[in-house]
Amino acid sequence: MKARVHIMLKNGVLDPQGEAVRHALGTLGFDGVHGVRQGKVIELDLADGTTEATVKDMCEKLLANTVIESYTIELA
Amino acid sequence: MKARVHIMLKNGVLDPQGEAVRHALGTLGFDGVHGVRQGKVIELDLADGTTEATVKDMCEKLLANTVIESYTIELA
Image 1 (cartoon, rainbow over the protein chains, first blue to last red):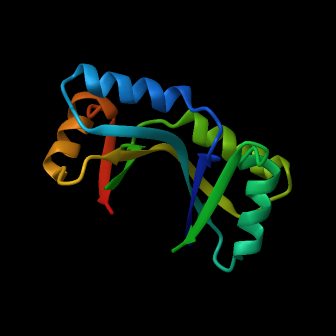
Image 2: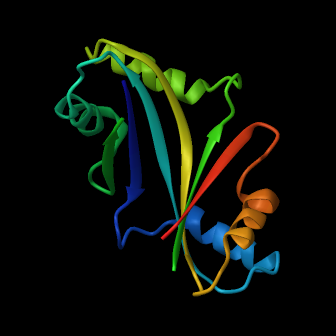
């Protein structure tokens, strides 16, 4: 089975990488880009029967820094 | 309007970051992790009426390195 985890900086946490992308898009002539946030996506190929609770545990222990990052889990 | 772009390394391109995560999960006692791929997600806050073609243009010109990365676009 597959799981996909999205990890984004929490709202209010400064995202310099996203800000750099926003600025670069403006430089390239793309108008109307009001904001950019950049995060990570991690695709996990897991043994069948792995529960969402296990994936949550992985996020809490390794994948996300829960002080500044939030995560969402999609199982497929 | 919002757009979300997923950027992943193409299949066959070595992903050392994902491999490091896979190894670390094993070290932490999570068994049954067969593979991990790590990519980027970029959330764009765009002016209303921006077309998918414009977002695709952003991907081709800046966001993705299309030699080694593939991207998918979700508009919301």
